[in-house]
Length: 168
Image 1: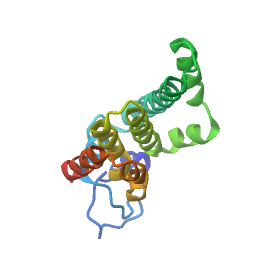
Image 2 (image 1 turned 60 degrees about the horizontal axis):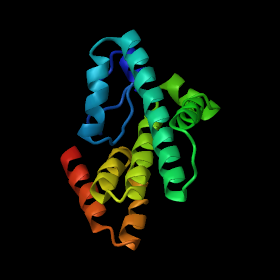
Image 3 (image 1 turned 60 degrees about the vertical axis):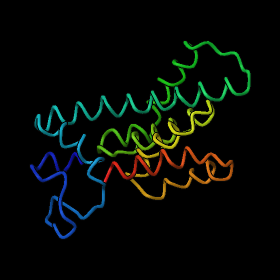
């Protein structure tokens, strides 16, 4: 994404578009739209805004997972402790690599984390809708829907289907 924006290449392109800056990919229009909006400001602001939103997605995703698990297991950690751990996760090597090259992995992580959080809080529709973020980006991330199906949480599947449908 960053390479395409840096070279004034289109963020969204038809499957047949190939050149030295652009490669074939299959993102849904709803996934591409936020990046198009960020790219409108030029390369340097795009890179900075992408970095900020990526770090926010990682910290938010980590915080959601950390909040879901202690609450479901009756572990008493303060919100400040959980937030500190969540902020620390943003500095792990693999995530820093994602920030540098402009990958959308942080947003996938936040979507799956949101799914888990809402699943643990019995909000099936929101769990399915949060999983949409990951599923629209890479279809194989739809796999956690198996948990919703196995537990007969069909409202969650409805949220996922509705979100994917809206994304296209």
